[in-house]
Length: 241
Image (tube, rainbow, N blue to C red; front, side):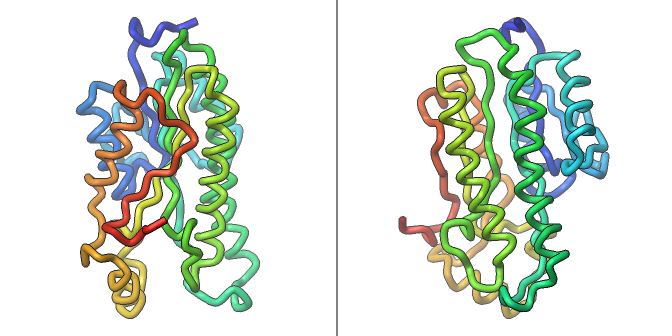
């Protein structure tokens, strides 16, 4: 078994080439992790910028095995995702629904499947930290966001399940549910949609990627010791329950 205190601790971020992913990698590196990005693009500020399709189970297994040969897989942030169409449920193309669910939710199952066995190989009591990047839309069920909201709600449930399964194994699993974050995904939405979403946030602004990274860094760090299966909001006051 690998004792994490004695080996290089690696933090993996899926979707590391995106706006939130890049902020996550930078912040985790500042905490002393060796960082790895799993993304279709290698353009990420990581020690190991790996081209990985997160919907491909074999590719994920191979990437996890490669990294495990270089250090202990200490932290995982499941961050890869796409927005998908903004449309009424009955107007959705089935292919678009499947693409969003596959990219946002099925990939999370496959990523945990690839990484958790390696974390279990670390010597306890601290074996690993996992954060699933969900969305406030998972809790609210925002209109016109059916596939995205449903997939993100599934990630909340998955975090709770994986937390219970690993609570006695030294692996903590939590979910984060940001409101809209200022990234390229935010720029995909129309001005009308942007005004609608902004109007729901009492602080009257969207979140910054660095603010998301700060919360994730705590969840992946040594001071988070008793929170697992929890959902942490980043809503600017939008979430009240």
